[in-house]
Image 1 (cartoon, rainbow, N blue to C red):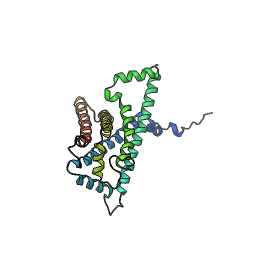
Image 2 (image 1 turned 60 degrees about the horizontal axis):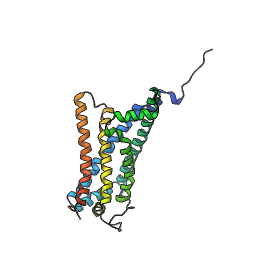
Image 3 (image 1 turned 30 degrees about the vertical axis):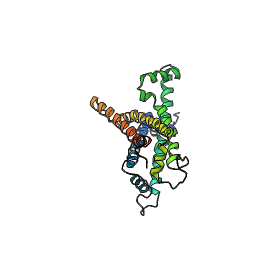
Image 4 (image 1 turned 135 degrees about the vertical axis):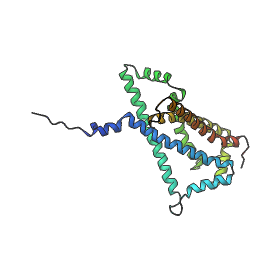
Length: 246
C-alpha cells in the first residue's frame, strides 16, 4: 500500500530559499548599501558646519519639519529612523546567522575543529575581512553613544541647556579630546567595515563579472571608505584644532 508523504512547511523550496546563505547575503548587501547611502547623506549634512553654524542648524531644523504641513512635524524623520533601525537590525541578524552557519558547516565538512577552521579563515582573509566582526561590534557600541550625545542629549559635553543650538553642541563635544578620540576610532571602524562590506555587497549583487569590474569595485570600495572617514572626521578635526569654534 502506497504511503502518502507530505512536505512540512520547513522543507518547501520557498522556506529553504529563505533560509539559504544566498538570501541572507543578499539581505545583508541590500541593507548594507542602504546604510552606506545613509552615511553619505549624514556626512553631507555634517559638512554644513564648514559653511556656518546657522546653515547646520537650518539643515537640522529642515529634517525635523520635512514636508510640513503635508506631514506632521517629525513624521518623516521618525519613519526614516525606523527604516534605518530596521536595516541595521536585519544586517546584524543576517551577519550573525552567516558567521555561525559558515563556521560550523565548514568545520564539520572539513573534519576540523571550529577553532582550527576559524583560525584558517582568519589567516586567509584581508585585514578588513578579518576584522569585520570587531569593526561591526565597535560600530554597534558607538551608535547609542552617538544618539545619546547628539539626538537624545542624555550625554551633555560643555553645555547644560537642552535648547543649545545643534551646531554648538557639536562644537562643544569635539573641543573635548576624549570625545574626538572616540569618534576617530569609531569612524576608522566604520570605514574598515564599509571598505570590505561595499566590495562584498557588489559581488553578491552580481556586479563582479570579470577582472575589469573587480578592479573598479575595489577602487570604489576604497573611495567610499575614504570619503566616509575623511568626511566625518573633517569637521571634528577642525573643531579640535580651533579652526571652527562657534
